[in-house]
Image 1 (cartoon, rainbow, N blue to C red):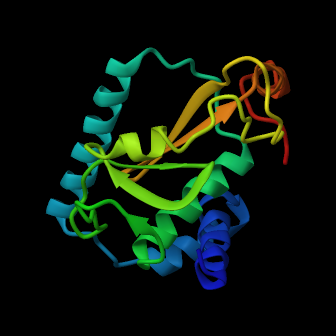
Image 2: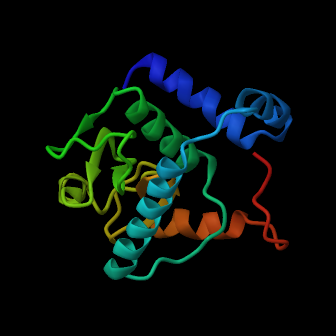
Length: 176
């Protein structure tokens, strides 16, 4: 991934998640409408990805994704949009939305659903993406969807417990 792509991802993340930036985002997007067909394709891709992942096994909801996961997802999506990632042989492209996948531990790679095994076989299932430790137990799998992209990440049992504990009783994430 390039420095330009990472810088763009940081700007996009801030625009999307910092409430103080909402007026600027509204100004930038004012009058801009995505073609209905593209919006429908993105919605369908999200639904397809969700159904596919549900077949793999149930996922536990832990609330909002932590900042490091959110940033990894935004980086993957923005770098894919500017063509700064390696893609599988089916050459998925943002102009042709379909379910695509990335993994925190395999940065710079986007695959379609048929080639998702390229990601799965490249991931060390005992390496935690949060604390960077390798454990004796298999890590827990998490996912975050943004547009047509599903980002996969792994957390060890200690980090998963901390993520759940860090959420406030009112269901809101902790201040970052």
